[in-house]
Image (cartoon, rainbow, N blue to C red; front, top):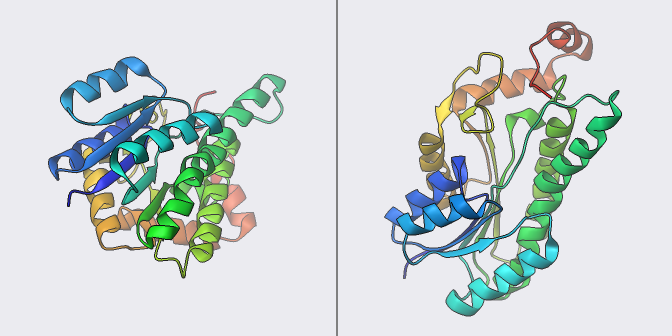
Length: 250
């Protein structure tokens, strides 16, 4: 039987690369994205995919998409919460408050909204994988990226909680923390991005991670070392090293 895979944030970047990769494997796809034009273009490339123009912040829209996918195809094998946004943010500017709210709502609550309608069905089936795309940025608070770092730290903790909750139900909860990925979201970063990978390279690795049910992974392995060093770097040293680091544009 072909895999049944639902992917949010599917219209560009890593989500699009994942959709293409699973399509090559013959998977039945449910693709969710906000941008109708890009999703329509992808759907033309991947005939047979079920597409849903919806915002992951809208719980009702996620419920409707999940119901339609399961009515057509049954319980999914894999649900990938990939939708995410990023922007530079500074707490001192009042106009950034809405940006904070949007990033946290998309990157954290959007993940909850996507998973929620599938969980009871997957638990009853006793199988499946819920996959959350977090980030190395969740390991430490990056200056000028408070909203994004906070959202990814929250995602990591949320996914860990969900993994333990689902431990005896046959449903795997997988956390993936990519480093820098060449996507529209990173295209305007005004700083060097070490160990940069293409979306296609990361998608290929994620597919293998899911297949092997590796529950927590940093991609690439070099960034895993960097992340571990940063995690345990004393605060006074971290502050000195990163106080003047280049920042993502607001």
